[in-house]
Image 1 (tube, one colour):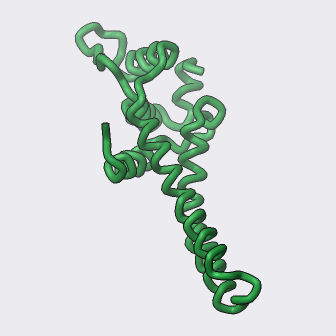
Image 2 (tube, helix red, strand yellow):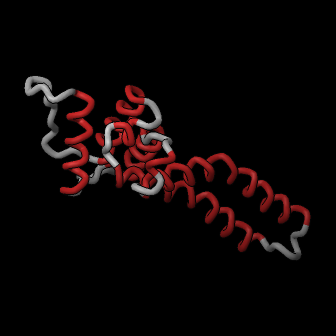
Length: 149
C-alpha cells in the first residue's frame, strides 16, 4: 500500500509519462484525466487568487468560512486528479488491454522470438511507456499505420 505522497508522486510521474496523442482520447480515460489535470494545475492558482481577492474586497458578501472552504475545494481538485492518476498507474492491465500491449510490443520489437519482451503483470504505467516508445518510433500515426486500432 502506497502512502499519500508517494501516490501523488506516482500520479505526477504518470501524468508526465502518458502520451498526449489525440487518437488515445477515445480509447482511454487516462488521456482526458491527464489533460484536465494539467489544465487544473495551470489555471487554478488564478481562481484561488480571485476567490481570495473577492474576500478581501467584499468581506460582507464573501465571509471567510465559505471562502476558506471554496479555496480548499479548489486546491483539492488537482490533488484528487493526481491521486486518481497515481492509483491508475499501478493498476494491472485487463486481459483485453494485455493482448493489445503484447501486440504493440511485438510491433515495436519485431516478430523475432529472441527479442520478445514480456512483463509478467504489466501496469498502466508500462503501457504508457510502451505507447511513448511507439509514438517516438512510428510518429503520430503509429497505431493507425500498424493497424492496432
